[in-house]
Image 1 (cartoon, rainbow, N blue to C red):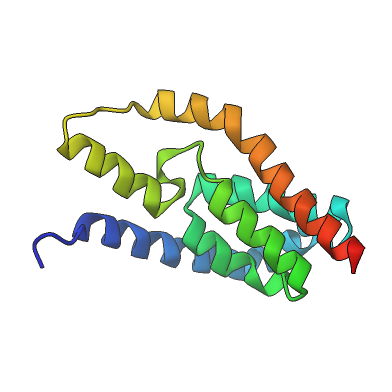
Image 2 (image 1 turned 60 degrees about the horizontal axis):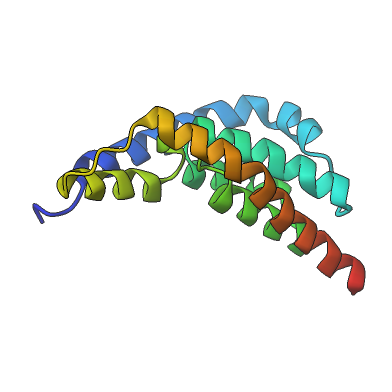
Length: 142
């Protein structure tokens, strides 16, 4: 039990609560920002919003908050790409990032949040766009 990262679990729980409280009143505004179709532009729009939200908060509550806007399989796939590949800019964007940094620290390797963000900014736009465009191509090929 003492090996469990309880501080990170409490942090993630707090993020879930904050996102749930914010999403209720913002539902209509978010729906307008996400688009509604399954074309490449709409999927990239959804992925862009999801990527920004995942980096600003965390990928887990972001997925739960945006899941109602991704009922079609293509939108769900684009959302999954965004919340799993996108949060590599801010260290708290993903619980995996936090666990990774913690494990690095335990082994004496310090990775600064600034360096993490700069390197993430180099990789993230291309990685998210490539994943979402692959989803769009798969939908178009059907």
